[in-house]
Every structure is written in C-alpha cells, then in structure tokens.
Length: 301
Image 1 (spheres, rainbow, N blue to C red):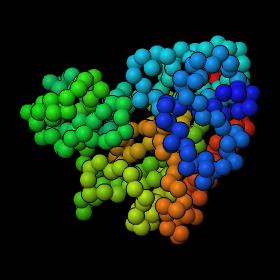
Image 2: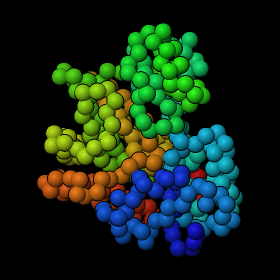
Image 3: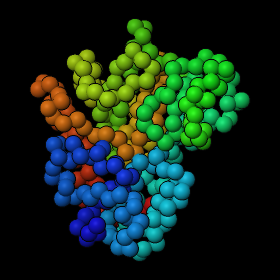
Image 4: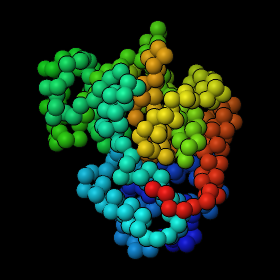
C-alpha cells in the first residue's frame, strides 16, 4: 500500500473488492486515480498511515475478534496526528442486529429481531431465520409457531450466535408482489439505485433487472428516495452504504444497511434502452466519490 498516492482508502474484507470491480472497470475507470482498495489485513499490518479519507466497509461481516482488531486500527488512525477522515466509524456505526432493534424501538420498523438464543422472548409469528453477518437472505421459509422455529434452528445446525430470528412484515401490494428499494449514501449524498420486485418475501438483486423493474426504477430515480432514508443512515452512524427498504402502506420498513454493497452489473447485462439510466445512477455515485476526494480533510471520526 502506497499511502502517499491515494486520498480515498476503501478498507475491505478479503474478497470485498468484487463489490467495486465492475463499477471501477466499466462505469468509473477514472476513479482509480482517487481511490485505493485495501484489505483490513494489509492495513492493520502496515505501519504507514497516509493523509486521506478512510472508508470502513463490510462492518456487519466482522466477528467479535475482527471488530476488535479493526477498532484498534481505527484508533491508530485517530491518534496518528495526520489529516484523517473516517467514514463508517466502527466504534459508533450500528451493525445489523443493533440497528434493527433501534429502528423497532424508535417506531421506524413494525417488526422486531431476536438472537436465536433468545427465542423464548418471541410472541409474534410468522418469523424467519437469517445470518447476522451474511448477505444470503432468509435461511428458512416463514415459520408460524415456536415448534417450527425450534426445528428450523436445529436443522440449520452449527453455532447459534450468528443466527437472527426476524418477525415477518408483509409489505406486498394487492397483487402479492413485494418491492425492495435501494439507496446509496456517500458522505451525506443519497442516490436512488435499485428496485427489486418479487412474489417472494425475500427480494434479492441476484439478476439483472426486468423491464418492469427498470420502468419503476426510472420513476424511483425521478422522484428520489424517501426523505426518511437520510434519517436512518444518520441514526445508524453510517456514511457509506446501501439501504434496502420497503413500504407497508405509508410506513417505511428498513431491512438493512449494507456497508459493502454490490455497485453495478457489467454493461452487457443491461438492455441498450436501460443503459442511460444506469449511467445516470452510477455517474452520480462516481461524482460523489470525486467530491469526497476534493473535500477538505481534517481529523473527523
């Protein structure tokens, strides 16, 4: 890592560079002059610290031991006496479980979340089970009582300290379709970026968008994200990431904030008519990175 050549350092978990690969190669090649991807392992081992902005990504994926090591590195940055700015401060940002708990307690979300070791507290069904640190969605179908839940947890096996039990919130429309909206945030700039439509309650963006999705995405980009999106990012203490959310009537329902989100498909995955919209979305994200690069830097953590 040559700390003198970059102004924006993006700290990633091993394999985390794939979230940036298509974006940097196909949509924002000029950003390579402004941005360096560095694994946490490399950063922690390297005694050199350069002036610049440090973006901590993939916070939800940390084990307790990894969080301790990354927090130590963050503290080293804070104490190094250089011009440093930190985005997604690991000492204050809320990861998946505490964020969902906080959103329920404050009335943003109508559903609660529990660790699988606390299933006796659950009195609302249906629920589903997911990993706390993973991004693979639900591990189970909807479970309608405590017996089904206990059997599902036993079938999953392994350590239970990484399993969350999430109350189901039905955000489907009158035709039974679920919509999941996605919005990037980078240093205060909110960018609408994704809209998934599915007949299943877990709406994943694992495939290029359909024509219907692209039409609704255009409308979403035109009107912009809900104003409450920024409030949730601020509550979470997160400066960079993608928030996934839906609506139940007028109530916004927040599913998660991913601090190492996939940014783009390769251009050939899109129909020619859809490319201008993707260029608009990803051009806004590129510009936000460039604005971050040009911002004055002093210690900010």
